[in-house]
Length: 358
Image 1 (cartoon, rainbow, N blue to C red):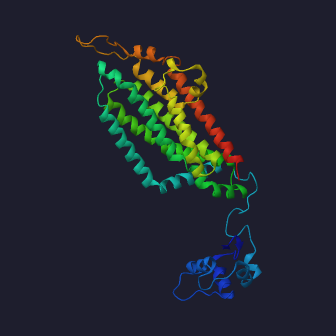
Image 2 (image 1 turned 90 degrees about the vertical axis):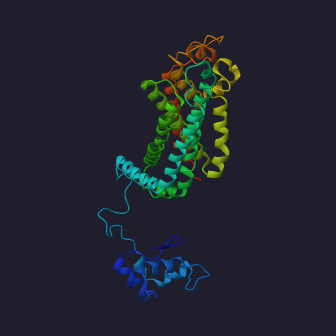
């Protein structure tokens, strides 16, 4: 039992009642002993019975504060460094993070509901775009909007991940409780598992309502890119939150990073029209690789219909690919860049968590 970081009592529950009675704090009749002890230790200056920490310590016998590392446990409380294998640390921390996520089930449920509502809204606005000439004007906007949606929702979901646990993790690491790599990987792994439900639900709803190509392989490629977009966005948010260290600072920095990625996402300024001096910013936009990847996936093999009364018809999706310069990198190349982007940003986040302690 502690008060302001000072040990007041350390021992078995059987000894606790006797120690408090001997110190002048007997448990009143019909009172929960645990509540009574908490009231004594947590009393504020305006409450009856308040005592300064030093004065309270003097009330207790010194033997009540002797720490016995072996007390009541099968293994020592003071573990030597490396005594618990890394894989066991990872498993325990995963279990703790899953338990923490279960406490947020209401937030997760609202997030999933929100995803379905937005997906239905997108699907109904662009309902069954078809393969006519009119579809050429809406196909690229809806593809880009899907990327934006997954990026935005993914980044906001984890922005507070590290700042909210910063004090706890620093204290546990200082005590040698676990390796920082086990903590980081367990947290990001559990967050990713929970987070990836969102793009799957989104893809299942949007793809068929919008009426993209009715091909199972193309659907799975679309879903994979939505998952990669979500993971890249969460990776950027994790990196920002790890480097900025506070939620307020993270909220100030993240929008700028996302806005730059959106601006050079390949839709507002297609690769074919990109000025050379902006090539480096274009290369840093994860939205661009997601957009180019799902655009190629949708446009390859797409045959468009043309009515006799229509002139200057676009016959297939390859015309749009050539016009916008979307074929400068393959679908596999886009996926590879997104995976590399995710790994790099998470490495930066890891080093931020490990070394930025103040």
